[in-house]
Amino acid sequence: MIKNKLIKVKLLCLSITAITSFACNQNNGLSEFNAPDKPEVTKDSLKIDVANIKWQISEYLTGSHFVYANEPDNLYKDSRISDWMERSKVKVIRWPGGTAVQNYHWDKLNGIAFDCDTWEPDYNSGYKDPANYMDLDEFIAFCRKVGAEPMVGINIKSGKKYNKPALAEDEARRLILHCKDSDYNVKYWYIGNEAYATGFGVKEYATYIDKYASILKSVNPNITIIADWKFGPQAKNRFNELIQVAKASEQLDIIEVHEKWAEGWGLISGENMEDWQKESPLYDGLLSSYTEKFYAEMDKAGKKVKLAMNEWGIGNIKEATPFENGLVAADYLIEIFRNKIVMACYWNLNMGNINSRILKVENYGTANASLTEISVIGNVFSLIAPAQGNFLINLENPIQGIHGFATINAAKKTVEIYLLNKNSDDINIPIQISNYNIEQGNVKQSTYSQLGNIIEKPYGNVKLKELIVSVPKMCFTRITIN
Image (cartoon, helix red, strand yellow):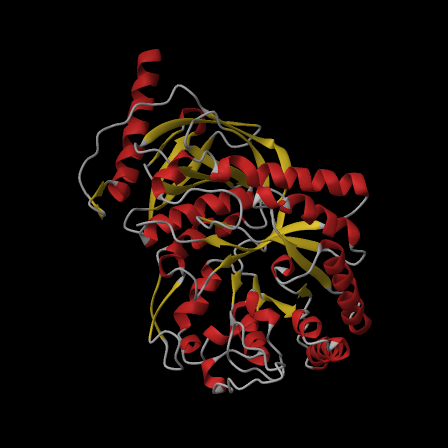
């Protein structure tokens, strides 16, 4: 009987290995569609306790950015963009984009995203044709098209820089009045962007948050106020400053963190894919530890401020392909999903390093810009999107180079396991699931493969006591059990 059971386990392992290695074996960037070598089964198991529920995962973790001046009308006529957003369950979009909020004026847009402010005394940069950019009304229309909540930014820099506080405050008031009168139902409002880099100290920024929050809430008291700071660089004490901002403001609901892997101005990270493989997990766990410290500090202060990552992203990873940028994005998303992050928006959809953009565009920067394709990075978002709104359950993982999390849906029937293999070899992993009322379940594996697409293969009905999954090398995988 023991011998028969071993045979069954080996057959199961072999069938799963064949499925996943078919998708992911690499040879000079291409997939080999031949029979793989069978990897060894690890001595350690992943242990999942369905009854140990941590919290419900937010529905707003695959959000996007529109940098208004880079979003021409012609580009968004292409239905592939809205189709991708719906597949990826993009439920929040940030506008007018990060630093663009520092010099934009919502009812007199110049179509220039950075540095050129129409309040400059000697402004002479002109105004681009509206076909070149996405204005507020177009933004709201697109959000409604894809079912996303709009997040709108308030310019606090211009009023300070040009000594026009009354004009700046009136601009904010007119903006929210326009949204209210137009029934736009904008719930989320962010106050400035990266104020630490534009001359705002901690206490001054907290004062501005409260001043503009009061203006906005005088029109709509039911909105959510968002500000931002950073975790790094550690040498500048940014994390402690973030805590000070959150404690000093009386109106703040959410504080977001802007960090990009492979950038030198934030948390210390690597520069290439070899560096990335050595980080176990991303940033060597700093995102998790800082998140835990943040909520501990809020509890001690009696504050209910939540944490978001509304400008997370990827810098210039040396010699990395779009597929490899997707692996780093998957690693980042795992950290976001398995921590108490209430909202996250990826930087960026349509600007930044070309290998990390979601949209691949020709005639970039012109009114004639058009979509050539959705980058393979977009598949990472589609793969992880079903976890939004599920309940995070306990996952014990002793295996080096394997990172992930597990969820169960609201009906307590479907378990999903998300695993990233940062190792250079396929790994067969036994999975032990406790307190699950299913002994034999339908198992399916979905893998972000080295071709950049998602390969879906069913295992069929499997006795869960005998479940062994093959996690392909340098791939991101979702296991669905129901």
